[in-house]
Image (cartoon, rainbow, N blue to C red):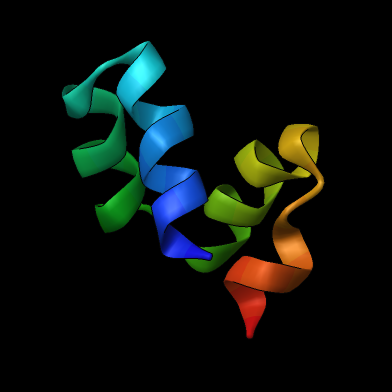
Length: 43
């Protein structure tokens, strides 16, 4: 769920979320890997 990712990114800072948005999907997966929400985000 993008909401979960947004919330996680929010904890680090909106800047991080914006950066990840521009980053490749692989980068996002790598970051989301820590939250184990890769499947939800990948869908």
